Image: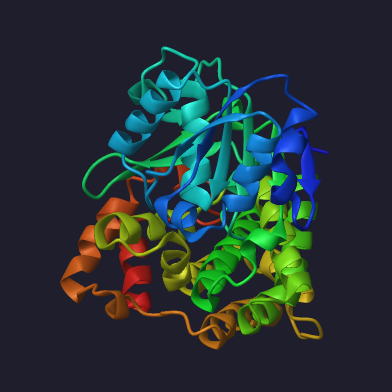
Length: 384
């Protein structure tokens, strides 16, 4: 067996309604007082956080709520949030929200405790720490950010950069599916498809694919294939909501150790330049990247098809193609946007997208087949 290393969050709590007793959960584990809760304004104003905040205060926590997080958070938002946490004397950071809130919470935990500038953290393994205790609570079943050591920051008008470090692994992840009940179908679909992509790319990752990540990715695909459509069709289906949250977490653990590749590399420019939400941008390029990868990865795609498309038969190539067709059908069934022209991309924009995708060298290195700029352009053309 080829040697490998596997890391993940040391502790999880999976409990429907767990956020309602957040104060007690944290009080059992941390003899601290001042807590900073990182979220977004919509969640804060919607009342979704009210039970969690009440529980925290009942248990004597002094809570500073930072609700300035926005999708694709820019550096200025991260820096301002960290300054507020320091000013409040935060002793522990809790991220509660979607992937952007969880990503920002990771960075606040480091920035509030360390003198290291944010600019010095970009890349792999450049965070020096220390950091504050960190707890992550997702409200969408997609990014898996609660169990990854990755934060994505918008660094310019149209560019994003990643910070990857073991220092960003949370100390505790709490999965409370009650927080996802009633999530609109379009958000359920986009985030769920994002998690599917995480599992698929982890299973085919060229660099650090390993038996642990394979097991997690395969199980994530199975769980999400069983639950994505039911969760979209009935926002109050508790069992489906729990399944999606668990599947997204397993996919997050998988790709944290066997990193994602060309789907994400080609999706990032769509988010940065055209502000397409991350899950939706993945869906736009997913089938076309998979078709491009078929010559190098058809055997692995066929193994995933055996789980995602039970009963599919035929050659390895035929089963691999069945996976691609299944994913296309899933996007159609959940009424997701499937062409670039639908999100405002013009044919004259495609070369710029291809050039921008080539900057994602950290991700492209993991793809099972080498992606050149001309190949990226052909993928965008197929998606157009």
